[in-house]
Every structure is written in structure tokens, then in C-alpha cells.
Image (cartoon, rainbow, N blue to C red; front, side):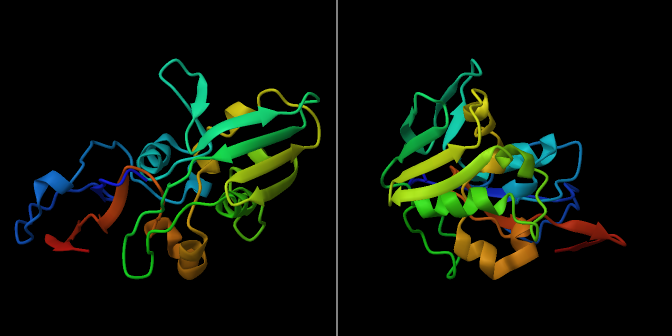
Length: 210
């Protein structure tokens, strides 16, 4: 996480109620126009562009795409692919922290175990992530040590590195997922430049409500 973080104010409905009773420091707010409602801020369900774009501001993965659509490091500093194309070993950057969003979610370093948890979560039947297919060719995920993650495939698949750039593969804070359960979608904790501060306000019968 970049140590100097901005607050991200998102609304699931993006409706301006004209309520001026709340004073907000404009320097802590990022706003953008969204034509459709954001339905979740859980990257395991980021299958639509509206959700992907928002999750992209909050989360990071092992790798990402640059402006030329080339795979480049994100939270992984580098990686090695075995000669047979089956084993991908990622070295994680050090001093990367989860966001501190409240008294419960305290900032702590990201580890290989966090990535193992996040990637295996995609294939958990109880989660039912639409991104489970990304891990369909994965035989095993192992945390070799605190900063080294190893992913073993069932068969060689050169495009696998590109699949890991998808927001499905973002690292999440396990403690937050376990605490909030299904409500994690509106209580996200990532490592990105922006953190989620509050839900937007919606209108009901002309009255602004949370």
C-alpha cells in the first residue's frame, strides 16, 4: 500500500441527493461517473467493468498489465517459471501493507499466505466466485516462506500469467473476509492507493439516507 493514501468515496447507486448537511474534505475524495450501479467491492466477484474499475482502485495482485498490455510486476517483485512451464514462483515485495480502514482492520504486511488464501478462495464452493475458472488449471498453491509464493499447474499454460492480472486474483485481508462474510462486498480491505471510506447516500421519498 502506498503509505500516503487517499480516501475513496463510492456510491453503490451514484445518486446525488443534494444533501449539504455533511462537510467533506474535498481533498480526500475521488469521484468518477459510473453509468451502472456498483454491486460489489469484493474482487472475487469483479466480473463486470463497473465492479472491476472500482476494485482496481482498492486492490492489487501479483502482476498487472501496463499501458501496452504487457504483464509487469504489481505486488510481486519478480517471478521464475520452471522449464516445463508448470511451476510459477513469485517473490513478493517487502513492506507492502493492507489498508487500515478501522479499529478492526489494522495495517499489517502482506504475506504469501494472504495470496494463497485469496487465490484458493476463488475455488471455494461456499464463495461461488465467477472467477473460479481462472484457477481451473492450478494443482497447488504453496507459501514457501513469508514472501515467496509457488503456484503449480496441472499442465503448461503460457497464458496463465496473463490470467493473474485479472482483478479476481487480487489479495484480500483474510481477517476482514472472515469477519464480514457476505458483507465483505461493502467492507473491502485491500492494498491499493485508495481505500474505501463510506457508502454513498441514496434518495428515498426525497430524503437522503445511508
